[in-house]
Image (cartoon, rainbow, N blue to C red; front, side, top):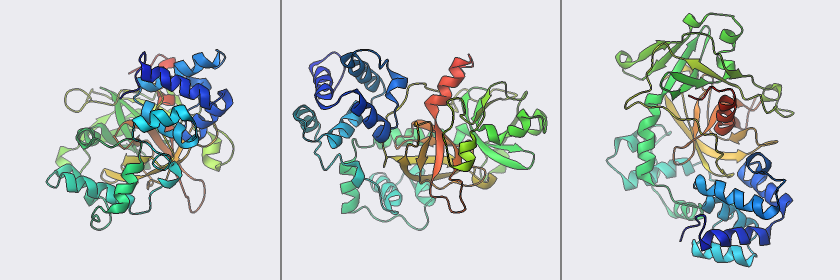
Length: 373
C-alpha cells in the first residue's frame, strides 16, 4: 500500500490529517518534530483543506509521506483514521515513538555491524567500520528493536552507491593560516562556509592563495589540486548567534560561499551534488553522517543523530563528532542524501552539539540570486 496522490490512500491521509489537526497544531508538529516550517512551504492563508492537500503533495514529491505518517501517529495514536493508515504500514504507537529512538553510544557501531553482517566482503563497509574506535560489536536484539522503530528500513544497495560518491566529491580547502572542507555542487563549483573563505571575501588574501584538494587521501600522488578563479561572487554571512549561541539567525545568514574552480572537475564519474530547494522532513533521532577533512587531515566520516531544530528551524543540530577544518562539510541522512552544510559547534568550552544549515535553504538563496549551478 502506498500513499500516492490522487488515490484512495492519499485522500485518506488528507482526511486523517484534517481529523487530527488544526493549522496551529499541524504547524507545531512539523516544526518541532520534523524541522519543517509549514508557512515556508505552502500557502497557509489558503483554506486548511488546501493547505493539507498541498502539504501531502510536497511530502509525496520527496518520498517523505510515510515518515510524516510515523510522526503524526506517534503524536496522535488515538486518532482512528491515523490508526487505519498506520496499521496498513505496520506501524504501532510504540514503534513510532521517536522519544525511544535516541540511540546509545554504541548504536553507530551497531549500525555498521549490521552492514558488515549483510555484506561481509564489501570494502566500503569495511572502511566504515575502520572509522570506529575498536571492532564493531555484533548486532543484537537492541539493534533489531531500534531498526523496528524507524519509519523505514535502509536500502544498503542505495547506501553503498551513495557512499562511493562521497569521497570524490569532497575537497580539502586550503587558505592562508587554516583549512576547511567543501564539496562539488556543479562541475566547477564548490560549496563551503562563508567563514572558511571570509579572508578572501574581505580581501585579506587573494584568490590565487586558495586551493581545493580533491582525492586528498593517503596516496598523495592521486591528489588533484585546483585553484579558484576569483573571490566568491555569491555568499551569505554567518550570524552572530552562531558565535554566541544565543538569539536567532536571520533568514539571509546562512554561512555559505560558492567557489568557482579554475577548471571543471565534477563531470563524468566524479559527479556533483545538485542543490535541491525542496525541504526534507527530518526527525529528532534520525542518523546523520558528516564527511569531513577534520584538522585538515585525510577525509573521515563521523556518525551520530539529529538532536534538535532550534529557533525557526534555520539550523539543525546533531551529536556527530567534528573538529577544526570540518567547516563546509556535507551532512548526509542515513541514506546518504545531502541534507545540510556543517558550519559550527556550540559556543562553549565543552560543546554538546554541532550544527548545520539545512541545504534547501542554501539552495533557495542561490537560486533566488540566479546562481543555480
